[in-house]
Image 1 (cartoon, rainbow, N blue to C red):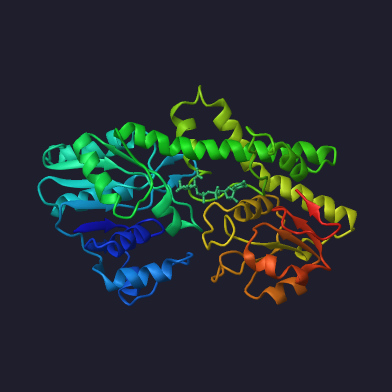
Image 2: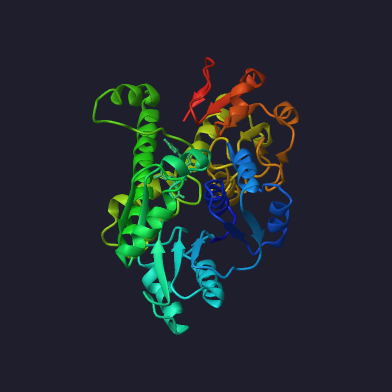
Length: 406
Ligand code: SAJ
């Protein structure tokens, strides 16, 4: 039996995937409400294909509980928040999960940590906890770091098709864990050591951050002389060795805007490129704000409440708002005492910011300028409804004449 600890964005789909593929799984989460709704067949977040997977898994062997199980295989997928001020990770949930596992686990159990952690975290935070409790690592328990790689919005597909990394102290244990994951993962599974697994995960996200930053810097350069950054990127990408990403209103999510900071924090003298990329991406909400100001000036609009931000999530077609560019932008406005901008997101069903509308029509009726912050399918389908507005399209999805771009 596999006990998957943490039933969030990563833990739940992973648990379901194992169950679908014939493994006995128990999903554990400390959130009673969440466990209760999973027990009643209700999902806690939306994701393409998750409903079907849930049904398939339920017809096999899966259970949800708040209790840790006595078994020999644990997968820990609990949150690793980061501390805003210090940019360091807060490992408390992983530490507490490992401790709870130690309370019940069988001798020789394998503890697989999937949560993203900063390089060195297992040595720094996890090993001392285990030895402090009198367990011998490599005998009483085995440690593995198998960082997740799946992208919200395409989780189910990527669980099956993405290559994986298994970092283990003991290569034999690494191979066993590889075999376990290969019941659903059809791509290559690389076995390595724990440090390399920790580092490669953070490097992957820093790589993407840097590449998005390059696109964002180009957008700013092109803005100065009114060049079309999208056309330039489209042409440049025809080169066989060039693949520039898309500029946008900023970088959000719990990973790309967070993980590179771990490297900056640990190697401050060596991370010039990584730090600059972070700064460029973090500067994008302010760039959007300047664009809004330009449009307001041009059209002699004085009242910020005539502006509406479309999209609160960190990217299209997900309901996750963590570190979202829109929230970053609102924070910026707040610092400048600019209150009253209107906000709407069809995927965010609870009110999380001021002046947030729950109805799209009401939202557009109240505004003159609509700023497309997120390229949800919803706005693509409903573009005709904003055709008479001034549009600032930060995602390059609107083809109307006269649309303002980044
Ligand atoms: N973005 C751009 N321009 C682009 C691509 C993305 O502005 O061309 C923005 C998005 O709008 C979003 C942010 O970047 O705000 C990040 O989105 P994303 O779709 O690139 O990635 P995430 O954060 O959803 O997921 C990433 C993935 N990592 C990589 O692609 C290297 C995923 O595979 C990881 O599992 C995940 O981080 C994680 O958990 O680490």
